[in-house]
Amino acid sequence: MNAPTSPLEQLSAFLLRAERILERIEPLLPPASQIPDWDAAIAFRWRKHGNVGYLLTVPNPSTIRLSDLHDIDEQKKRIDSNTRQFVRKQPANNALLTGARGSGKSSLIKALLNEYAPKGLRVIEVDKNDLVDLPDIVELIAHRPERFILFCDDLSFDTGDATYKALKVVLDGSLSSTPENVLIYATSNRRHLMPEYFDENLESRHVDGEIHPGEAIEEKISLSERFGIWLSFYPFDQDAYLNIVAHWLKHFGCEEYDAPDAEREALNWSLMRGSRSGRVAWQFAKDWAGSRRKRRK
Image (tube, rainbow, N blue to C red; front, side):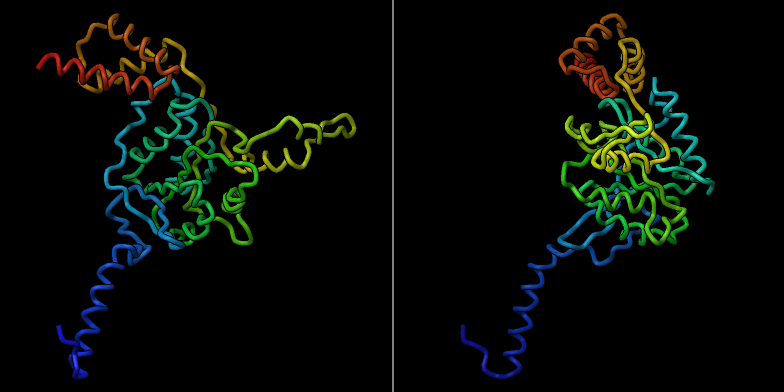
């Protein structure tokens, strides 16, 4: 193919090459706008593309309801009351949910969203690695009419991890206060969020008969103390576990089932998983319901 000679041909060839390059680059670029369609979803995720962060809508959020969560009545009552206050524009606290895995901590946040979304509640999920972007997220939603929960799931920090400082700033505010339409709900398997070591206790000292923790321990405890509500979740006993299994079996359409047989299988299932949790009960019920339907067909 002959090279273009006239200026017009050279310009056309240049534009063609530029268009092809843009077609290859465009899929790599972040969304054109950081502002999502607020009316299109009730749940969002904060995502990063390079150094640019943006909100991504969650098209199919979990449908779990508060009535689906059993044997955590006290925790459910406390966080539900706090969230109801928040939605009504009354004073409310940030909350830290800690304890056994699979005990309903994350499911409780999802159920609260489904309960109060019609009243303006929205949830933004923020990964631990993106906590440094919390000030940007808060600035983006500060003047919105909706009520936002920033949800940090399975939160914990390693030694030397500095991202927790961004969380501390949003929890307590810096020179500017945190907007009244924003709360932080976090879940974690450990209450103090950061690892603790035995030799740190050696820093403790006695002053007038009182024990004062060392600076390292004080720093780790101070993050948890910035949450106004602490809720602890514990492993389920056998009766509670079987109660949850029965609920999910009915949910999956097993209205009539051999209860002793199902309970025996459910207990064997939990032994294989090494846990009697709500998550394990839900997984067993799905397997049981699916296998029984297959046999009937």
